[in-house]
Amino acid sequence: MTHFEGSLLMSTQIYYFSGTGNSIFVAKELQKRIADSEIISIVSMLSNDSLNIKGDKIGFVFPVHALTIPIVVKEFIKKANFEADYFFAIATREGTVFRGFVEIDHLLHKKGKRLNSRVVISMFSNDARQKNYRKPTEAEVLSMEKKVEEELTIQTEIIEMKRDLSNMDISYTINCSSNPLANFLLEKLVIYGMDISKYVGGVNYYYTSDNCIGCGTCENVCLSQKIKLVDKKPIWQKDVLCFMCYACLNYCPVKAVQVKSIIGVVSYTEENTRYSHPFATINDIASQKSGKNK
Ligand SMILES: Cc1cc2nc3c(=O)[nH]c(=O)nc-3n(C[C@H](O)[C@H](O)[C@H](O)COP(=O)(O)O)c2cc1C
Image 1 (tube, protein in one colour):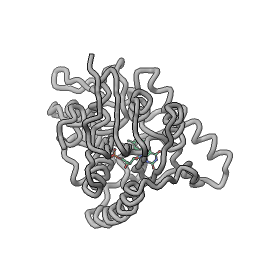
Image 2 (spheres, rainbow, N blue to C red):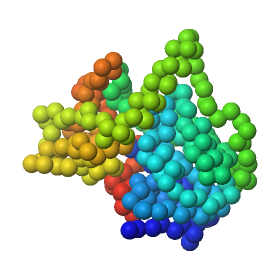
Image 3 (cartoon, rainbow, N blue to C red):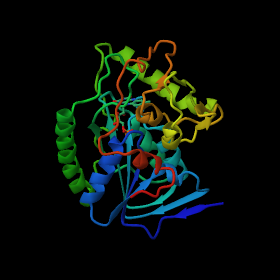
């Protein structure tokens, strides 16, 4: 039995989850700006039987998954007992609507807390299933990075001053279609699909193409430890929940990891390029499991 007592930690703790480094970049940049702060991997915390987290300010940094918060972030917030004055959240996304802050606020509310501030930051997509998906150029990455840094300067001030923005609209609604009802129903469907995936052991829609070289990178970066290399081929175990981070897809050095098409969603991973944040190494991703890379 392992227990985590966070009382000896820094006054600002930034808990992060990241499949391809966008959220790691944000967490690290924020940590540099906030005095007496540290970043802690959410994945490394999950194996603890109890989580007692104390601090002055506690933050969550993660990618948007299917319009909401990743399953693993939800599980972490549900499981932990928090003792803190101030809570903040930063979501990185490609650019769709995001409903997750309402969810976090709801989870914290059950523990008598509030989500005090939050922001969504648009970065590049790591979802290579989409038609015409393309990797950003270096110039695009640099320009995006500048915007991210500007936003983080604003957020740092908000967090350090403990500004309470909890009364502002936190649904981050952006109408993607001209039909609000269709939009609403689509959102509900996507979020529901994400939610039920945890009851079926996680989706199992990956496969490898013939060019797989059996190098084991996918197993190394797999944050849920769903992938096991058997006879030098990755096997996605059915009874292990996939965290949907797409690290296996994006870090495969020969683009052999693919996502299958499912009803209504055609996957173009065989023809598409891959994305990972330029500063995020394989070790940065994989070490979220042990929490030993700071
Ligand atoms: C399974 C999956 C679902 C995603 N869903 C959304 C989405 O609904 N909206 C969005 O804007 N981006 C979505 N994205 C893109 C990521 O949120 C975005 O690229 C994020 O910055 C990746 O962060 P990371 O590198 O820290 O994992 C999705 C990515 C994946 C892998």
